[in-house]
Picture 1: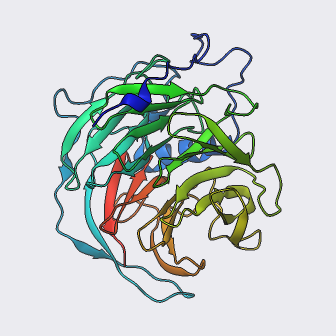
Picture 2: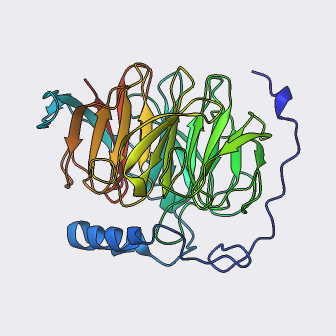
Length: 371
């Protein structure tokens, strides 16, 4: 693989500040502050892990030297599902990775089935194969090239996506996108905090289509921004509101094989779908439904059959929709046993129909085979 297209010089990110990594003039009480209360209650009452909410900006340490994460072996079994409004369709639990991760928030898969996860409290990316075996990791806390800040307090900005060539795009607290090869070698970056064209305020998700076009969820600015593969702005759409093409608490972003852009619109309790130019196509959900609304940016994924998956963190469950918005499966519930979650956030579907879900408070990834 050659990287002649990646010779652009890195974009300046701005002056680094030492007060919890905040930018000059930026407040620490980012949107979605209700997350902090829920996470604190969940961690204290269920896990008793107050260390998850340690002081901002602390240096992360590897939990186990040389072996940062391993899968917990589990025979494939069925996780029961029950829906009054949809057929009963069982989901197979495959395995979990529940060691060496702290506050995993988002993940993505590549064409080979490898899984890349944002390991939030450790400010790094970890990579596993489709069997859950650890492959590599990269990153440390900071604002330099190849460094990240994923969590300071409360809500978690950021996102991760992998294109057809295996280039890994990562967004973090500094509202920039960094690109790496599959082994973690830094390639280039673009973006900075702000509300002008090409700038981002609270990156809530990333997605890449088959041509390498990168879509960034820009939550504070209530818009989607579309970039080419090296960071040149192509277009943007969206504004604050509840109409078609408007967003309140914009969440996860996914792109299907037809080029449709699927966006979680949290406070409007819906999913919106657009074509690749930003033209509104359809939505499902709405204020009268509780099935989609999460307490923070929802994770969204789409599989090869154009089924859409939503990580619903207000019910600690995952919902599967067909391309028309009909619920076809649902699984989860609050808990630490297999198939349950404490604040699911990131979600991804691979080429084989497997679904991976990050369990933020539970500190793990779970793998399922959906119907």
